[in-house]
Structure formats: structure tokens, C-alpha cells
Length: 370
Image (cartoon, rainbow, N blue to C red; front, top):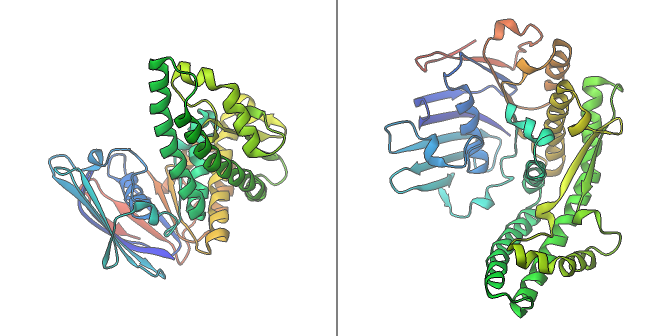
């Protein structure tokens, strides 16, 4: 599966832009501010129903316009035409797949697998645990409808339980049958999520090691560890979960917040036995972030049976020449990839093959191909 063309209307600086893509590597070249990243954002919209840049659809609408529209054509896909329309005045988004409208956006996740590598990925290795959970949840959700359904159910339970905890705090109550019912729901969906994440880490680690080997041979050994239930579980997951809830019940009511569950877990990245977050150099962080995305690509390809679309936004500028050249070479092993660059001429290690394409965006928004 690959994206053969896309139309962008009134999204950021693009008024009416049509781009045709090659089946393999597409180098999107242009100066700062011409809308290169917006092209990747639009593709991400088509694949996931949401932006990869902002949580607000309104912010993506071109200034002075009442909405945006994105159309994409996928080759070798069952439903090959995708369209997203967003109305600013109604604050409403519509997603169409071929000739039918999709009302449940979660049904789209995983249908068009996508992997995005961007400068924002620094938060995965250097930021808070929530960023690492977001990464893992995104990968698993694209490959497992069951996991996505559990995650949605769990987050709904968290919201109801937070509301109840605050009620109990205000009334000074410490026991409540309603809380016991929500605890049961939290444990059921939460334990499923933890178990799925445990299996994922076990399955995903070889993909990280393989990608690392392609870039750095055996010079560094990466590892990923899963830290769950505050590291206090050595037996049955559900029983551990229940015990932690009992232990922290008073604290949860006093603070009015959920203190136990997979929404508080973390994933620890290591290189040669040392925690990357505390001991890694900037180069090691950037390499690890890149390898996570390559690992995600091949993991999703194996799990879904479909080659994801690989989006790389302004990646090569932050890497030394040796690592950039190795990563460029590794790109030849993926399917369709779209890579934004400010100046192709200064990236001597990037080679354009017969199935690849250079797409130049001018300041006036015009598109030319080489």
C-alpha cells in the first residue's frame, strides 16, 4: 500500500495544493515556512483522523478560511479514497472512506499504518513517562483493535473514577460501593493493557536491536524495560492491581486522583546497561529515537501485513554525517517514505533511485518534480 496523491485545501499555508508521490522515497524540498511539514501533517490526518502537530483542528485551518479539506488516494488498498473535511464554524470533522462516512474514528486506526519521525520525538527518550506511554500506545493501537478498545474503555473508567474520588473527598467518605464497582472495571481493563504492553516489549525489543545493528553494527546494545504498578507486582496482575488500590485508597480520595494503573507506568530505555535518559549523549538520544521509528515500521509491517507510510520530518540536520549516511542507506529497506529537507544539495549522502522522486515546494506554493 502507498499514497499515490494528495490534495490540500486551506490547511495552514496551502490554499489548493496537489502532489503526486512516488512508490518509494519522496524527498520534499523547500525553504523554511513553505509548508513541507504540513504535507506530512495532512498525510497523518488521512491515516489517523488527527493532526500530528496540534490537538486542535481549528489551528490547522488557513487564516481567514472557514475550514479545511484533505483528499488522498491510496494504491493497493481496499478503500483507496480518503477525505477529511473540517468546518471551523461548526467545529465539526467528517471522515469519508471511499463512498461511506466513518462516524467512529477509532475504526480508522491501523487501516493505513503510518510512522512519523520528527524533532518532537526527543520527548520520547528525554521527556516525561506520558510521552513514552503515548508512543507505545500508538504503536500497539495500530496493530491491535483489542488493545485500542481496552485503552478507550480504561480512559473512560479513569474519568468516571476521578469524578467519584473528588465527590468522596468533598464528602469525607472513605468507603463507597460505587467506588468498588469502578475499581473492578479499572482492574479488568487495566490488567489487560499491562499484559498487552508486557508482550509488546518482549516482541518489540528484537526490532530495536535489529535496527540498531543496521546503523551502528555492534557498537551499542539497546534495551527497553517496562515499569508497571510502581514495580510492585511479582504475581497475578489483577491481584497486584487490587492490592495497590487498597493500599492507596485513602491517598486517592484525599488527592482526588487515580494513583494506580497503566496510566502511570513508564518504559525505560537503556544503552549498554545505562539509562538513556540520564546518561545518553545527544547523538545517542537522536539515534535511539530514529531506531524506535524504524523498529515501529517493521513491527507494524509484520503485524498488519501492510507496509506503513514512513514520514520523516527534518531529521538529517541533527545527525552527524556518519549516522545520517547509515540511516539514509537503511531507508532503502522500507516501502514508501516521505522525507522533508531544507536543501537537498547539502545532503550528499542521500541518493535518488529510479523509483524515487524529488518534490520541490516554492515560496509561492507551486510544486515541481525532479
